[in-house]
Length: 94
Image (tube, rainbow, N blue to C red; front, side, top):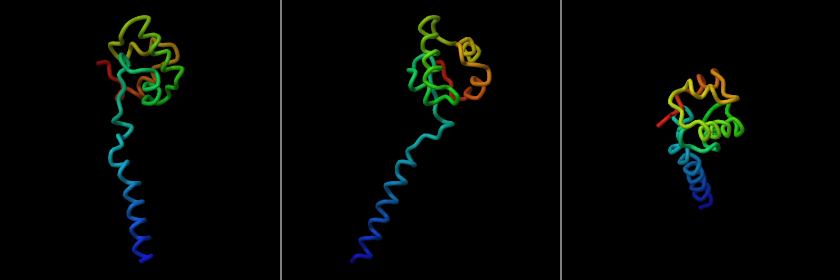
């Protein structure tokens, strides 16, 4: 009986560890809309963009309006061409 209980616990533990991974979105599939999302989301999704740079994106958007393309993001202080190129597949505008 004790052997069955241990085996059942092992299966339950394996199930609980594997189920969340089945529903996780891979990093390369996560996107961020720089015209809509908040600084926390932008910082979480974009590589090399911390909360301060993400806040700069949001402040720039508030001051100058929406972004239309990747080249617009380079105008934000602290966001360079390399950062934009690294994250180009994750950045959305609509």
